[in-house]
Length: 297
Image (tube, rainbow, N blue to C red):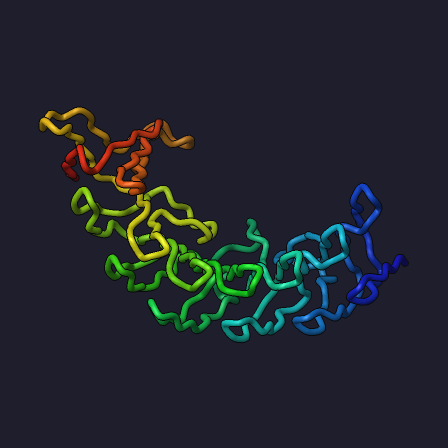
């Protein structure tokens, strides 16, 4: 039996240790109940790996200086955060020791454990923000290194209604925040009308797969103005003389699984420095002061 001493206490009966080049412990699996002492309370790293749900991952991971980086918890544990107390099964930390990510559950999806089975274990959690209050299931919370919320990722199938400076939106996947707590980005759950410098555009990204909400297709500036969006609209560009000089439409992409199925790849629009930047294979830029635009379905 191999034990290792850390600044958080002893790790008992470890296996599969990995080390940094300088010799410091990077990660290991704990094979019996061990308690480590952290700023977030006494935590028990995962030591059960005998069911179809638990991922076979390191119980603990450390930064090179010995500071805790990740801990997979053996049981769902209540963790105190700036937003309140939440259940957690996996925690990630910043190098300064503050909480980076909290996952209420961390089950392994497979032929033996489905997303629906994981959902049955997930309980809705309550949140109250200036832009919306809701009780929903989530995948994770992400924090800045000063403990302020950076993003909230919803469980698949969940949506919330959020109020922004550009209107009220039904949101899937989740949202991200600036350090001051204002909305940075959201993922519209359906095509949503937005007033933009070029007219009304429907914001929507049909290819959004919702892995996390750290970045989303509708993004705002820090002073609540529109910054970026994705759309399936067609954009026609006209010069100062009124001549049409460009047309941008969503591209069609063939499915990798079925040659008879195509997906629409949305245009990416960014409003910056008095210009409209359109991402359409290449990036095209037009001054708003010298060009006009027509938006169509």
